[in-house]
Image 1 (spheres, helix red, strand yellow):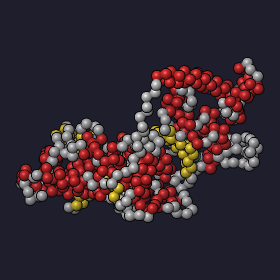
Image 2 (cartoon, rainbow, N blue to C red):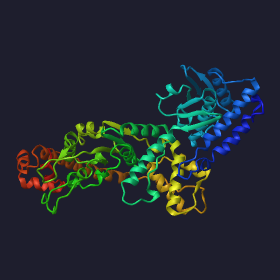
Image 3 (cartoon, one colour):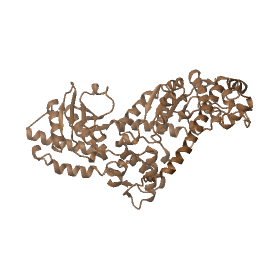
Image 4 (cartoon, one colour):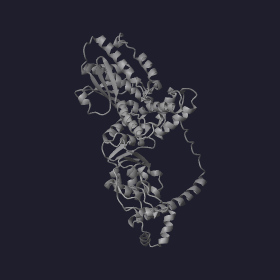
Length: 536
């Protein structure tokens, strides 16, 4: 390619060849011996950039390093010859900035956003060859729905360090070395995760169970950067995101990269604990504290001392238990249920919520003071559908793990199967993808998954006759009235129990009914007055 004049290069043939090869992502993302995807796109981009630069120099008789203006003209001309619509943008010293309104890959890039790595490696490789160093940041991308591309190439290494993300390229002798920031940070976090994972167990777990981190997207890269910053501190962290996005993995990463990594990491799902047992599970109980309490029980806080406690689904925590939790966060001490002695603990709290806590606070079912105490450092994990560039490497990693689990040869995705993964909405996120790929893996007839077993769309509801709708509306209205009345009564009872600390007699006096009637209502609403006697 270098021997052919730059002006006569056939961009159509080049593009067709490259797209054909690049869209075989199951090969370009093939894992190495450590199950990390090999970035063949980056290497292909570095080679292509070198050939283009050689042809450009030969045609113009250029010798020696290019200056910023020549470099900018070269990269714009390269991309436009293969179908782009690039143009220079205003830049500050030490920076070259270009914008683009048409992707050379066309609509295909939306199903394979990791092809943007080609732009990064072509631009970065040529810049490193001429300036010794380059950091390429794709600030906007057509591939992820931005409507345009904006590429920023930093050539000053000192200046570049103040900018997060991006891919770095360096010249060592005559060799250009690329280092993806996503691969770098995910490797650091995963290495420490495995250290904590293996180190905290008496026996070595199966290799298929070890944590893996994929952070190809900017959103996940920024999440891991936040983890690195906050992990060594004592700040509480509140992780938000839809079900299945990997909130517990991020919580474990925070623990693994902290000074507590060699101590316990305990996870408790607040939504899975019966309401009348929440305080006993979290804070423990003394012998005889209630019927069935035959011995002293240590709760999660006591067992997580010197370590990290992950409170998943914190939005499900009952209101009385929220007051107890707030006191522990404020004073680092608590009493077991039925106990009188204060116990001190040193626990790092990482909480997670799937729903929006601001709405729960507005409804009065989640304490604002507790929210502000937990939300010192917020981390939001976007759903998988908003970070499509993570889908191919995630799929590759999952398939590699399945090969280990079932002791079969590694499976690869066909182009059709990859398109299915990229176009699906993934309401269950990474957890759903794991289940889908495992099901597809088990029923695959060969080593190539030609298609994946995605869930079928729910059937459309059949129209209901008007007379049936009228009867249904009448019943529904009655049920709604009763449900609303029950909810008001339940909320009032809980509020009075909190005010009078579970004193049934005072609650009865306030409502002008008998204590027996109060007990009947508490039984009806399944409210345990003992829980309120312990609240503060």
